[in-house]
Image (cartoon, rainbow, N blue to C red):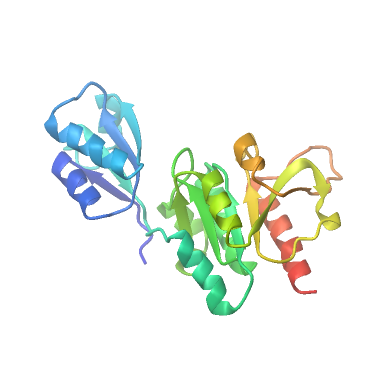
Length: 246
């Protein structure tokens, strides 16, 4: 797979990208442009749950690599997304209880790439991310994952909470990282499990946290009170690994 980030510029090119099923991470449209092709692009974006940002022509000129953006630029994923069912099937194929990372609005692509790398090394069967307000599978993510993106499926969903409800029907239960939770060493983290990691600044959102069965905290002995999201994911993931090996 290639690591370059795809930008698609021009109205016809963007429309065809949507219609061909190419995963689009973000869509930038020139503010105030309302002609027919732009309306078509908006409809396609809505159909595919693609985030739209309305920006100035000057901003599009800065982003553009061709200078011929025609008022619209799309960012396409460097890698194709999996389906949630693909992740469950990966667990079945290995004869293992599912182990899934769920990321609540991780916005830093370096963090996302590092977490995907950790997920692979910890034996997780896949990663689930939300479509909006979160980093997608860009070139930076691919590079930071150090090749793990070739082997670890990443699914992108519209509603993380709803996906968790559906996974509970498959027997999964969920633990989220929270500094006010129970110390992770006191929790039983075996079985089919989803590890929920929150946003770099705000942590796990309220609606997602309400879907979790347990909250786990990491013991802190220093002078600051929080870890980087990818480091927290690694610490908790390897406590899950330890318990699964018992």
